[in-house]
Image (cartoon, rainbow, N blue to C red; front, side, top):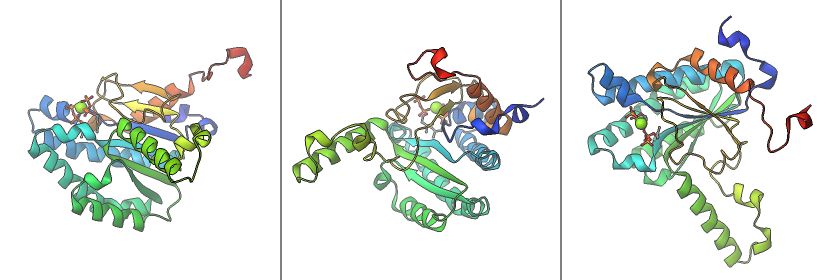
Length: 246
Ligand code: IPE
Ligand code: IPE
Ligand code: MG
């Protein structure tokens, strides 16, 4: 039996987050330029996105470019920005066909203007779609996001809109870029790295973490189903003991 058949569709995670890692190593293993790894990574994302829609995952959030990635060689950063623009423009129709809403989180204002404009237009075109929300984390850093939320709350206190006593977990979450999404139940990182690299630190407080050696360009639908089956075998206790969960 394949992994897909083993999935219990009544207990799907609503939100899956993915750190799509290993593009560079995938290309290097074949003696190719890193750019080819990134291009192949887009194909994996397309496949995973379509599989999420097919099985009924409501939110897919992928780490596409971190704040720290700006420190890569200029040629690679430029290539990634170009790839982002061409992918958005080529895939808007696919998003619409699959009824997927496009969303972006991160310091979007720091992206090249063309990226901002094309992202805006694709988000507008897909804004009424309802099957799944695909969120691209771009120029994203969780520490940046948390500091921004703290700054916004401080400003609201200063302006007399809220009091210090109003600041609680809910108020804080409502200032994050993920405000209208549930926290991810499952986070997948490919390429054998066991770290979260500044991704969704607040939102992953109780997320199940899944690590695989598979490099992102090799990550296929079956790999996603395998991760979901693994997730469904886990007991999520949220601090309680097993006997309390029955
Ligand atoms: C992930 O693959 C894509 C981005 C970070 C943009 P990498 O480019 O990090 O690939 P490796 O980790 O060097 O193999
Ligand atoms: C994390 O991958 C960021 C993305 C996948 C976009 P990196 O390859 O940049 O992370 P580190 O440097 O290995 O932690
Ligand atoms: Mg990497």
